[in-house]
Length: 400
Image 1 (cartoon, rainbow, N blue to C red):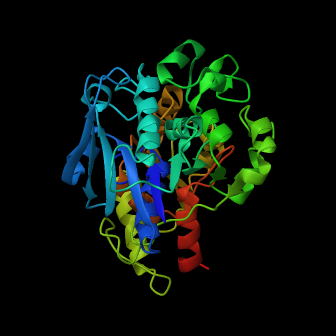
Image 2: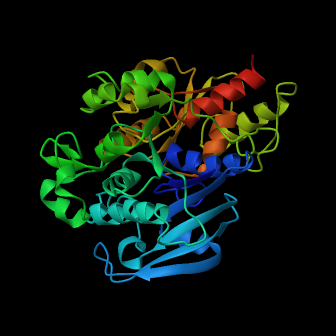
């Protein structure tokens, strides 16, 4: 079995959320089951720099606004995986994140950047780009890769099957309908039953409409996205394709999330020996500038700071919780400017009770999970990310 995972990020090279963890963990796990699983990724600087044993397979262009596009094949040391990387400096070599610039606004050429990702996946699947390998299954992750399913379906001779995984229905890859011509797809796809969505085009809908199978992060979320409350406007399509939709519960990589071996923790611990966990809590309180206390409950939040993740609900509850004086919070994340400002103001007013780090720090996230007495997951929907799978596994092993 040959499987190509198509995604915009991968842990530990480029990460904005749990998607990167899944993409980093799946191919090595599948290889242990004798599946030839490989990655296709955009050539963001950390990804290009990490590619070892690089071999340039072909150079194309001009394509999607780039004069030169080179498809490379190589290996990553971490994750230990064979990968194809789209080296297109005009589209990917820039400061900022994979989807947004340093100022937090979306890159204006995201349509071209991620259309190229989907286009390359389909042509790699057809056997055109690597004569020695082609996948039997293309597994596209989230809206960034959704167009791969449309490109595959639009080619009448291609027998490659496709799977589309929804990690978060709220992010839909919406662009003006007038830009459809830039995709090079048949006009028939720009219809209500295709990728058109309220007079726009949607990369997410391309995956939902044209993938052979659809998966998402839990059985519960698979049911929720078929409702108006949680379907983000796509619930009708999910219901239409109900027999093709599966919910597969997110898991974690025990080699990465293991308090007995994690190198970034100040102390190790297990269910049989919790002394190390007490040391982790004490070290976390010191690192976050909190008052040192073994008795005070310490709550951690590692999240995007958005309305969807329920951060405003935490802000509403903070005054009553803090008045008691018997609680602490350690918060790590970034997101909406107003929520960041509100949390920063709360932390400035109560520095002994609220420790805040804006941004993302993978090692600090591990220390928060290990040192906290409880982890907050106030998400309004799609709550089944890796945070609670990690903490659920830890709680079961350590506290039950």
